Length: 586
Image (cartoon, rainbow, N blue to C red; front, side, top):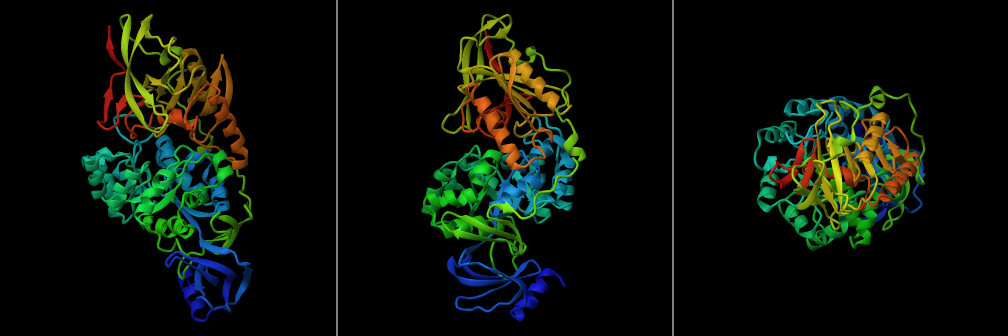
């Protein structure tokens, strides 16, 4: 008998059930009521939920709810596990302890390094998870072909193959300009989601209205990149689902809540975390932090819970999730306090997995997989200081810059600086507001590199290098001295990737991430101190921004306006064309 039929059979006779949770205050996300109830569970599914005043369910196991609030397990609709710097099984520990029972993960970070092999590795590792991990098939491997070099390329054929091997959707479609302009590649990729009857998730930061309207018309369902009230209203009015993000780098809820309130908390909004790092996960938890923050900002608690459960389940097209109701998987969180989202117990398919913030069954430590042992930093030769300079003729040169934005660190603008030229290279020694930024192709695909300038990022000495360099994850190096930059790049090549800081010819911090240069097979308790240490080391160099290790890599994200850099050149994002690093030479 399958799970649904077992639940149906138990419901007809009001038991006995496999498990009964008694004496809870049920948060009904359909009606937005809270009332006393008992929950009968059979075959991992909710079979029966008593109406107000009804009771008397019996079961093989009975749990006393002690008057706690019973809410559905939370659903994170968009998350990159790689940004946690932990492999899926270890990331699942944080999720389960945070009341998150389902995530829709986008593995495009690791897939940009190792292609289909990476997708299957993530699937396999997720089999050991303590909650449900669904994978959307990456649409942006690379994000914008021709503008950058990745370790693999996914076209419609590869995407169809991965959808047929367990993919649960089409992950964030980042080339929104290509979609709006009906490029052949992007049109074919988006059509694969429709052919496979799967949802397509979006990415449209501050789009002009015609691009937004065209993008929405493609059938892409959502966007997690909204950062202001006006943008949120525009997307909601287009029928898109706004995935309200609180991540390690982007704290959007404060700007988004007024739009949701203005529209009386619409159904086409949910929550996501996108990118969260170990120290933040250990301190705040996962999606539970979104719920708490939304309530602090004035959203009614039941509305916030509804967004994090029922609305999310509808977006990811999982009708068996998102509510405590007959026929839904018994993903249940018991809370001591509703507004504070104070978690007592977490059940996944009727099985208690976490109690008082601790897993009942610890994550197993197995021998490393083949994927976990590969050094994916494949450079054609050891980087020399010459790679980290800008050649120019004459005595002075007008050089294009990437202008850092203190108010919205994820956004950039294009600038120009007139600078002296010494010995055939642009000289920034007299300008502490400028730093060199170099992207080196590290996937063994040719070794091209680009060096440009960043203005006002804060870095005044030393250098920082990372293989966390969204989304192709080439090797990125930021610094003022080519010698220091060379040292940083070579150290990362030796250890297989991660983040390193150097100063005065010495390594001052190193976070080794040997799995694709993005992750390590370690727990959050092990990772968090090391992540804090490298953040402190990078901040000591003067780096600005809320997140000093995400910030350098974000300068390579060729789908966020206005200007970015890849291993192939300086990129005008909206025009999708290259800009010369040196604009004019005297």
